[in-house]
Length: 491
Image 1 (tube, rainbow, N blue to C red):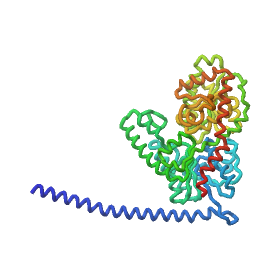
Image 2: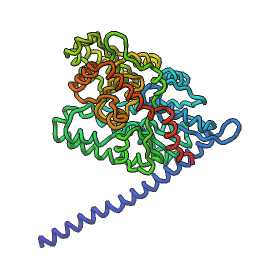
Image 3: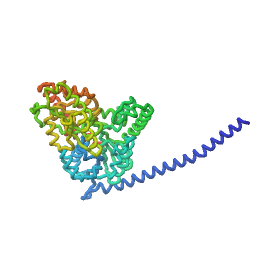
Image 4: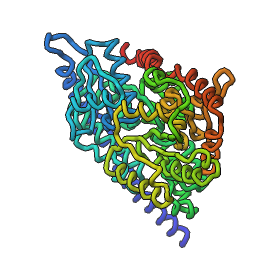
C-alpha cells in the first residue's frame, strides 16, 4: 500500500511538471518567433533607412563607409591607424561617403581633423562626416568597477545601436576593438563588416594571469588572495571568451596589428581564412629625416611615448629611472632627465598623471621627470631628436607604434620583453642588434645603465640597425596591406 501511494505521488508530481513544461515550451517558442519577426522588421527598416544615406547631390548612388571609433580625438596609435585608413580609402574610392562614429561631442569635426594633422601630420583629401554619439559614457571603464569587460562590451552594443540609428552604412569597420557591435551592424544593419584589432578584449594571457593568481592592473590583489574568487573570475573569463569569439567571428574581414594579436584572435575567433596581419602605419620617413649622430648636449634624455593608460605602466618607468639614478654609472653622466610624452583622453587619465607626479616626488626624482601631455607632432619630433634612450614598459603591448617611432628617430629603444616589441619590432636586423628588452624594474635600470655605458660608436651602430629595420612599418606599406585586406568588403 505504501509503495502504491509513493508511486501515485510520483506520477502526480511528474504530471504537475509536464503541465508546466509544455505551456512553457509553447510560450518560449512563440517568444522566439516574435523575436525573429521583430529583428527581421528592424532589419527591413534599417535597409530602407540606408537608401537616402547613399545618394549624393547629383542623384548617383554612393557607397557609405563608416568607422566606429568613439575616441577618434584621443591622439594615440589607434587613432593614427584610423586616419591613415581613411586616407588610403579616399585615395582608392574618392566617390564614397566617409563617416566616423565618435563620442567626442565636446569638439567639432573640423577641430578633430585639425588635431589629427597637428598630432600625426595627416591631412585628408576628401570630406568626412562625423556622427556624434551621446552615450559614450557606456563604454567608460570607470563606470564598471566590477565585471568591467562585460559592462563595457554590453555598453558598446547600446552605443553601436545609437550609431546605427543615425546612419546605416554599406561598409562598417570597427577600428577600436568593440567586437560586440559587429553582429549588430551585420545582421540588423545588413552591412558588410570588418574589424581592425589592436588588442583582443580578452586573451589567453589574461586567463593565465587569473588562473595563476597573479596580481595585475586587471586582476585585483583581493581576488588573487582568495581561491574561490579566483575560480569564479576564471569561469567568468572563460564564458566571456566564448561569447567574444562568437561575436568576433561575424566579421567578414579581420585585420590584426601584430603576430601576438594574430595568435590570440585565431584562437578565439577562429576565422583564419579572412584574417591578416596589417602592421600599424608609423610615420617612419618623417623621423628618418632626423640626423643620425651622437647627441652633443651634456647629459642624456630618456623619452617615453604612450597614452597615460594603466596598462602602459608608466610607474615602472619612474621606479626604474629612480633606480638608475642610484647607480654609480650616473656619476659619469650627472645630467639625466626622463620625459613622459602622451595623450590624456579623460579625467581618469589626468588623475593617473597626477598619481605619477606624486610617485616621482615620493622617490625624490621629481626634478628629473617631466610630463608632456597632448603635445604637437613637431614637439614630439624635437624631443625624439634629442633623446638617447626610448622607453616602453607595457606588458604584452599589442604592437607599439611609439617603439617604432623611437627607433626611426634614432633613439636606442628599451622595450618590454613581450608582445609586439619582442615578436615583431625589436628583433635582429641582418644579424645586428636593434634595441634592448627588459621586464622587471631592476632589469630596466641595468639595461639603461648598460646603454649609457656604451661608447658613442656602439650606440650609433644599434641606432643604424634599428633605422634600417623599420621601413616595413611605413605608411606606404600600411596602405598596401590595408587596401588588400579590405578589398573583399567592396566586392
